[in-house]
Image (cartoon, rainbow, N blue to C red; front, side):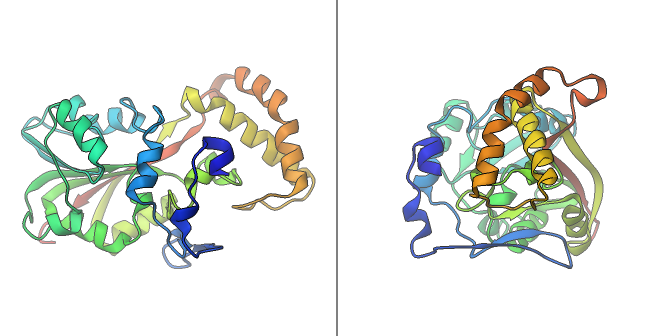
Length: 288
């Protein structure tokens, strides 16, 4: 489907993997794909060719920048081209980024960035930062535990960990065949409950869970998803992560025109339903 929808070949990313399962943990509510096939640098280089991949303006940027103080030392994990750094007023900023292309763009923007994992960074930068943040990164990470543990190590006592990720409580969870929300792009799916449980697991105070409003660019996507899901329920069809059945393909196509009208006519309080992303704000407890 990558080939037909985006014109890129991802077959090499899967090597000998022919199938994978989406599993929900009964203890913490995290959904994860097994095996966890994570995209290579070449895969992300292909995605970076699309201008929508690294956006300068994101709702979570606008939300998070108000949590940053001029006296703060900031670390951003997976800073991309440094868009968030350009929006904030802080004492110091450092970005961690593996993509060479993104590093070049960040440097051109005057953003300090290094190529290092958060796990390695934490071994020599313990309790250095007032804020550690990551935007649309967590869902790509295969070793979630060491990622979060290392981020917490880098925080000063009472420092903030700000994490933004697609929400599995949003309408996106109703989208079958959502290729950008499965391997090799995403390897986990996060609900509000999984983020709440993460706070307990890593001894963090959860200060806020903020859901972005539906972005204008996603109105058509939202409308088609809701229409198709409603029709599939009429046919008593269960929602699935992957659905290549004839009935789903027929329903999806049949809903194109009605959903366009629906998107234009979303009234009143329904004009901005919950969007795709959720941002969790955690505080490191003193002595952790």
